[in-house]
Length: 125
Image (tube, rainbow, N blue to C red; front, side, top):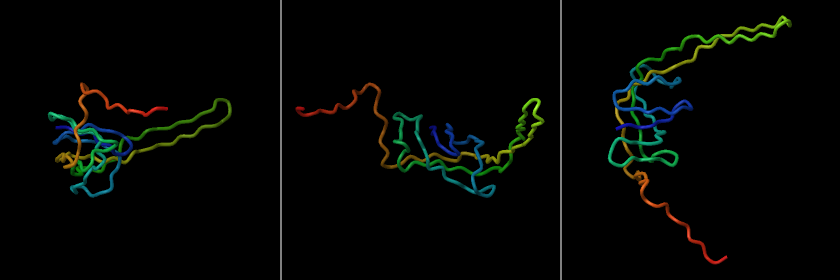
């Protein structure tokens, strides 16, 4: 079973046991967190697709580390104008270990691609 979750403005495909590096999430190392913005759940007979999120679904994870990424140098220069700026940036990160994926009890399965789309009937115009 896998899930597609949204965190830090990005989407990730996760499975139980995976380690995931995301943008900083508040919490202490070793604490349990729950990612509730689950976009889709698959791997079973019927996939669940949210509109935009799967109702009641969550991914539980444990915070393994709170490191910082390597430094990125931003250098600006305008030739012949004596203009130079050098800045560095280190992104705060969180390493997560995915524990479990829970589905919502009232979640609806995704429509089969073989089923025709529902039609909207209109009255006389």
